[in-house]
Amino acid sequence: MVINMRLPKKLLALLVAAMCAVLAAGGCNPQKTPDYGINPVALSVNGVDITLFDFDRFYTTNEKYYYLTHGAVDAQEYFETVLDEVVRYGVALSKAQELNIQLTAEDEDEVQNELQTQCDLTFEKYSKTLADNSTASAAPALDSKTVEAAFREDKGYSFAEYRGFLARFLRNKKIISKLYEQITADVAPDEEEIIAYIQLNVSEQSLDSFSTFVTRYNSFVNEKGDVPFFVPEDCFTVDQLLLQYSSDESESTAEPDASGTLPAYTFDTASVTASEIDSILSVGVSYDDFIDLIARYGNDENMQGDVFLRWGYLIHNTLFEDYEKPLLIGAYYAHGIEQLPPELSNKNTSSQYFETTDGKRIVKITAKGSIRYVVENRSLAKGPMPYVEGDEVWNLSYDGALAAASDIEYDDQFEVWFSEANVTYYYDRFKSNYISPAVPEQK
Image (cartoon, rainbow, N blue to C red; front, side, top):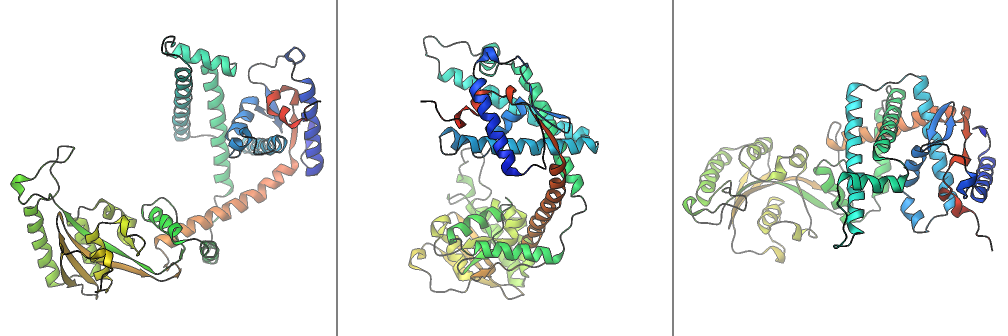
């Protein structure tokens, strides 16, 4: 059956449903189904063949597949959703072939790496299934032949054939991603679009709780790609220069940790280093100079990250359980709060103040096991997250605006290709278990 994609969607849906019913009614008897091979063509888009393996990949990896298997989504609706996704895949692949888009050697390496990863995971899955389904007294030898035999019995084709089908699918997906890159190569958001992107996210995040903001902030400073655009409650951030040492009283009695290495500092060496830092701070340093000292002397791994170092630890009265008490004490003193919350009362610490040449307070906190210098990074008032052009918020917003603009450009062109596509469906080659749930049970 050949369908031009100019057909109205409602008519197309009815046509799909009718074909599904025909298949479910007559395709369940294997004696009535011709042998089209182990991986027949399921549909063709502008002459580009999409195989049953390709369809199955989309069918079983859709985000709603879990809900389908638990009866939480309509099987017919799910089938039509996947079918539309597969057709769009075919349209994009057809356009990529028309434009003669080719993979580079680097692209091929990426495909091979992904192929190996997925094949390994599939092999492990079948190995585990065999082991779980076997009794201790009659467990099969889980060698590669045993696993591959189980795979063939389940899928109807060998593991080597699976690898070939998957390699083709992954290459095609990579080609489509290169099509996207080619179509959107000249897209570049301007300042107005970036600001609009920021304002949209500010509006959306303004409804979030503070705990959601904390999660997003931690993802942001750890360079996971998230951006906190809205601050739900007043808070602030701090940087620390940490000298964490063995609790032993001297270098000679320091004990190695579980890995067999001595701590970066002992009491003696930390004291010597702290004296050096005190001398530098007493002469006078700027905030930026102090940040350089953190990189030079500190042994806080978090403060070694570029973004974390520029933004610091988030401090709020709901986060006391997240940090060591000496850091919190130093943070509140650095923020200018002399009367500490009751939760932070600690007689086993001592403090000393320094001031940077640009007016920031540095607080030295000495406690058992550590000497640390804490300085306020920034104060965050409830409302939109402050940003300046070129900082992390701006740059990640540029990336977000670029992605949005690129999607619009690609989608606009894609809809033209989609409306002009000629699609041939080979429904008689589909396995009946894809669509039989959509047909009412006969009484």
